[in-house]
Image (cartoon, rainbow, N blue to C red; front, side):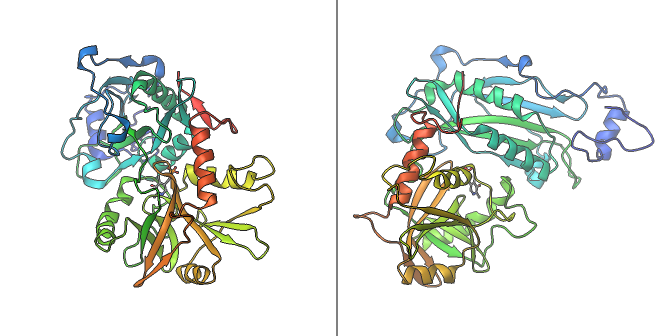
Length: 412
Ligand SMILES: *Cc1c(COP(=O)(O)O)cnc(C)c1O
């Protein structure tokens, strides 16, 4: 990076460098060295000694995101030198300046991914390049430094291979990965973060909701998750904190998650994408999900569900669904009055939410304006044929029992 004295230099993310960082560089405290991107060949690995490794609890006793594996991946970005040599090191606390950008202005980006153990005992990731691309877009949205996502994925795979003993074997269980990028510029100026830390932590996970019969949603419109031109379409920490209060109100009313509305239009459920299945007059099904208009997080599971539905029955047969059944997918807005009408007429046969954590989860009822929309029951629970088929096929692909379009990627 060339340092000029008359015009303000640019950081790697293309923004002008804030004055205090510039001062540091001008004073010669940080030598202007060539920028480096993430380089897996510079990886250093510090392993936890054999006798200090954590004990792994039984798969049935896992609480989502409470326990972390022995190791983490860690890198830092400095505006003068670029990305540091990557480290895989024992899991542990970070030391950060209290004025860090991430604490003050929420320059926090994250991803949610899972590693699965295949029948051959080899760990696998599910469509990881989609998560990497989304993380790069999220980083750009809050002006955090860009990084080589392919190089980052190589390091992620290495971390998974090192902590592979943590991947639970039971069906539907996995190792949840949390890649995180935070702004670490120490300073209160309301400006882009010149410095950053990028790390990955991992936590063994069982099925996310322990209510297989279906989850209940409470539709709210007085608290809004996302809006046109906002950040709802990016995985940024700042999108989630404002949801905790409404989530608590929904829980007090006896519902498990919030159904987010914009006016009377449905956007998402909790941190999951929303789908419904409608019975058509010809006996086939319309499967509808809201369009990616910037207010919806573009889920990897959402995209995968749409692909699998579109492939039935010409390219694949979804388990237990008849080959004569046609599934017509639609990405179009869904309003609450429409949902009420489809429920009353008997057209609404299934509703479900999808995301990495839950995979596919049936919805049992939706509370809205003092009434409940109750979804049909299928022999005692709300798991209809579409939910059952999608869950089974996705988990089979993720766990490497069914090969589909190269979606499952091994880590060795
Ligand atoms: C992460 C997330 C999803 C699901 O995305 P996946 O890539 O399928 O895990 C949906 N909605 C929100 C708000 C999310 O944060």
